Image 1: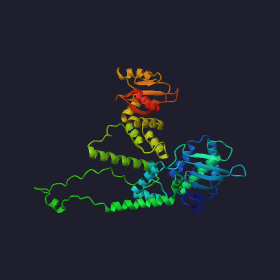
Image 2: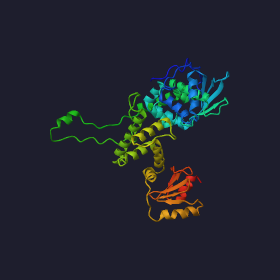
Image 3: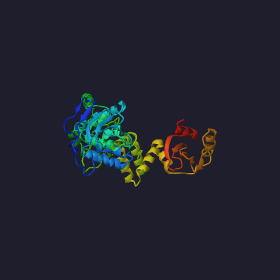
Image 4: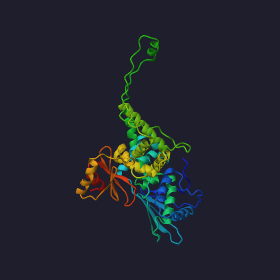
Length: 423
């Protein structure tokens, strides 16, 4: 791995839930990038995506490059350091983030021990994309909360920005710093990974090999010319679940490993479904529908760094914007392929359920809705009647035609609106 070096001058002092890193000497950052790894850059993006003042970020980056950040202490959910500014006395600065819950750690440990290459990568101070995809380890926009004792009320101030940039260098050097930020110490994680890996290996060793009927080669060759041929062995049973994709080692000249892993997993799932049912339910989808389906199936909530990259690449391939894709994903999660049709295709419903919807909403004390084709709208709420007979809820900021799918579809417009409003 091509990790950034020099972020640590000596081995950190730690009690597994508290690690301290000495002050980093000044250094030039000619390209403006403090991180060399994908997870280090994702950390920086989480701060920059919510920063309100680019000028403060630039000053913070300069502070970090000139070595203004003192020793950094990392504990679960917190990164703390004193940062030198224009005054003689440094400011106490910290970055807070939410620790990962027990369910998230279970998903992380299960995924890490399911594949030996994941454990090998972690021991080599590397973070496979697949682990981030199933757990959301990396912060998304808004997850990092800066705080500083300086009088500047910027979000973040230049001191907090400097600490964040310097922390990215620590993450480059050792991803277990990220795991500690999320709540688990290195020794604790390694012990649990070792225990689970040993249990998995023991289970695989003791598992009975499947019995496979065979035909001797000499028998098959002796009968190749003619009369009798031995019966073929029975077909093997369809496995209970799809197999795991091949391992994609990191290569700067290769495609994105997360995209490869995602597509290989998708191919395995489709092949397994075809073997089990005899048909491929995805075959009839258009490229756009398939892209929306892929993005909607991506694990995790919110837009993590890996999810942002997936949305960007899928949208670019189909000449759409990431916002177009995000809106379509919301529709797909709301109602599948039918929900996407409701988002994109207005239509003229026949007389009947659509005409009865407005009186029903008024009787339930909801505001008056304006009809247009299959849609009923107020300033900020909208119901759309799908061709499947279900009502789909949408929301927008008042006065803007920026409708986003919300809530669950319902055959009753009152029920759909009630779910949308959370009543």
